[in-house]
Image 1 (cartoon, helix red, strand yellow):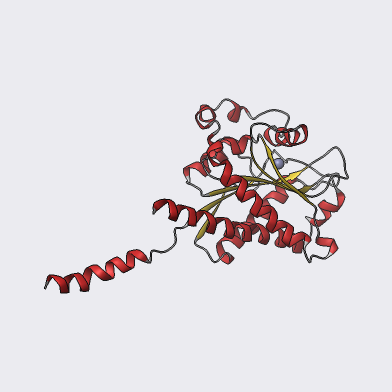
Image 2: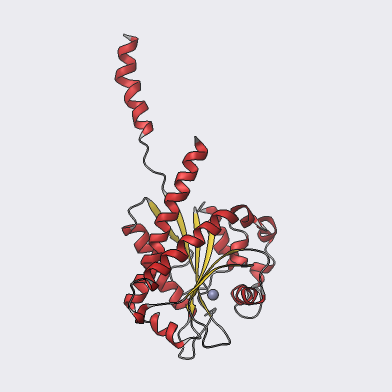
Length: 262
Ligand SMILES: [Zn+2]
C-alpha cells in the first residue's frame, strides 16, 4: 500500500520538480539622460537622450517578445524625463535584476572619432576612458546633488566589484553580437566600427549589485554615426543584436546559477 502511494503521488511530484520552468531573468535597460539632461547633442541637434530611449524601447520589445526566453525587461525610464543616477541604481537593485545595460551616445572633440564601445566598471581608467566616464557622470558639468549627497552611494560603493568577471563576460558577448550584426556581412551604410571593450569609473555602474554594462553606441559628434542612428533599419538591427547578446548572457548566467545550486 505504501509502495503504491509512493508511486502514485510522490514520483510524479518528484518528476515535476526535476522539470522546473527556467527562472525568469530580469534585465534592466537604462536609457541614459532624459528631461533637461539631453546628454550629448550633435551639430544638427540630435540628442543623446532621444537616441538612447529609442534603442531602449526597441530592445525591451526584442528581449520580451523575440528572445524565446522567460526574460522580463525593466526600463529605468520609458519617456523623456530626468531620472537621477541614484534612482536608476536603486530601481535596478530593488528589482533584483540579473543584468543591467545602460545605453548612451558618445561625444568627442575629434569629429572623426566613430564607432561603439562597450564598458564595464573599473575605478581606474586611462585619460580617454576617464573623460568618457566624467561626461556621463557629470552631464551638465556637475554631479547631480541628489546623486552626490545620497548616503546610499556610500552604502553601495564598489558593489559592482563583486561582479567584475560577469560584467566583463557580458561586455564581450555584447561586443561580439554588435560586431557580427554591424560589421560582418553588413552593407557599408550600416557598418559601425568596433572600438572594443573598455573599463571606466561610471557612477551609474558603481553601486550595481548585478553584472552591468554601459554601451556607448556611437558618436553623435560624427556625422556618419549620427546618420546611421537616424535610420530605422539600423536602429532595429542594433537593438536586435543587443537582444541576441542578452539571450546568450542569460543562458550563460542561468547555467552558472544551476551549477552553484547543485
Ligand atoms: Zn550619456
